[in-house]
Length: 512
Image 1 (cartoon, helix red, strand yellow):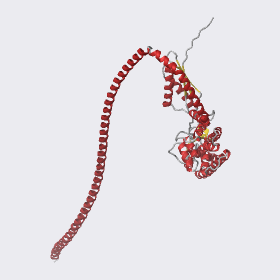
Image 2 (cartoon, helix red, strand yellow):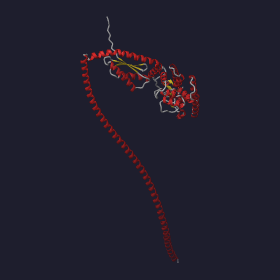
Image 3 (cartoon, one colour):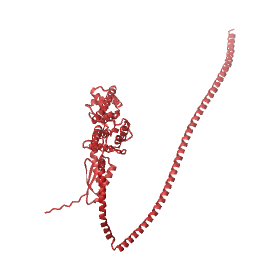
Image 4 (cartoon, helix red, strand yellow):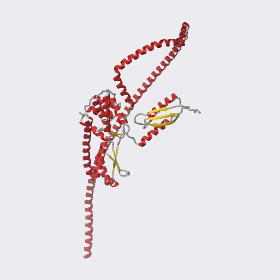
């Protein structure tokens, strides 16, 4: 019973397992097939999408490349067109040059032929003249020299009479125009010897008590000095120089604002960016007020009225500008007074001359960077602010930038030069001055026959001593001109340099 039960149980188990296997096999296979079909479908969809994306990117890339190629082709076409145009121009120029060359050759041949004819005619003329002289000598019984002497003697009396007549006529005419001509000659003479040069100061040295204050001015990581430079527009140079800071800028007003602001900050002791901006703004306002006040005071002192407020401000700015160490405002005042005196002596309007003299250098203190020389820029400013034409012309012509149309112009030019040329008015750096004198002497010594050279009159005259046995009198004149030309071409100097070449022969004997 038990064995049969076991056998039956085993048989049932086997049958049930086989049935379960068949069921699961068929069920899983159908599920597997369905999943596989879905995966294939999704793969096809993804493949199609990717193909579409790739195709779209390809088309975009193709369009971009076609556009780039088109641009490059366009540029190449433009370059080719330019080259063709240039080639055409060059061909035209070459043809023009060839044509001119042919014309020049034709002219040359024509001239050579004409010269040959002229030479031939000249020989014929000389031959005919000799024949005529021989005939005249035979007829008169006198030689050519004797006939010439007699003719000269006969013409002397006639020439004396005519000369005396001419002299009387000239004297009468001179009496009528003497005053006007004298003024013109005096002005031209002064004008020829007048000189003027200018140099620009661009630094101001600010002295401090100790290096500790220098460190406070610099600030942490340089923030104070950067704030000061940004506020003033001035470059501040802090180097190893003890107890000194250099303020560098081409604008003198900015340098003055920076100097005064530094002075107030050092005196106050509170140095930080916010305080720097406050002090600089305050100092800038004070300087602007002082500029206007200086301009007004200058015009009142000189007795000049009716100036435009902007011109008054420009005159005030001259206080902070210098030329060869000469203060520009002081130079303008001197020039104005000299113009008034010279105009009075010449019988012209002294007030106009003084006005032109004061305004002649207003172009040196521009509010913006001009592209014109200071004389022309000053003339433009004067025209802008309704000054009279003769004053504008005097301002623009004081450096020969424009043609002089009135007598005020040469007066301003001359007085400007006189103010700068007086002893002590201007200064140079000593080293540059000595170098210029040495260069003058060495330049003259480079010529053969020169034994000694001396630069005198602050470099305004050069004495050149030559050997009497090496150079004759004619060569001496040529040497002076050559040295003058070489100095003009190779050197920079204020005014003019007089070159005097000395050649002498001495014979010394002793009576015993």
